[in-house]
Image (tube, rainbow, N blue to C red):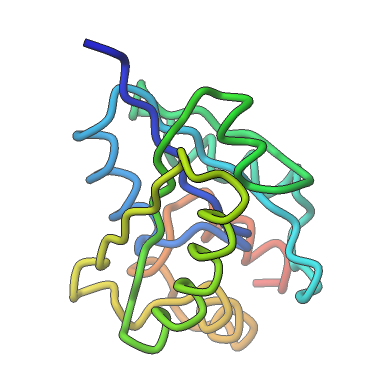
Length: 161
């Protein structure tokens, strides 16, 4: 049997419990999980790619089969680099699907060996997005229910306590 590997791509600016929900569930189903931190050219990041990677690494430290990477380029090229044939995309709502479908179609056209699987985030996290968490954090509200502790601390430092 071959080793199963999956890639979970995203900007993770910052990682939330919604992301963690997907990562933890995928980690139970694949031998290796490669989190691929991508720089989104359409968004100005709150955290640098290096800061995001450090926050993810701290948040997934107790999940032994997860590795965190940075990649600039095509996601299917990253999949080839790590030997993964599966991309995992988390969905919060139906509204996420249209965008994801376009990405999946392009990835499939670029590399027909790579499949994309969609996972719905658990309902208790379906309303959480990095953007909303950052906005709430700017107003000094309690975000501990939405992000791992290292992220909560980093956002407090970023926006002042």
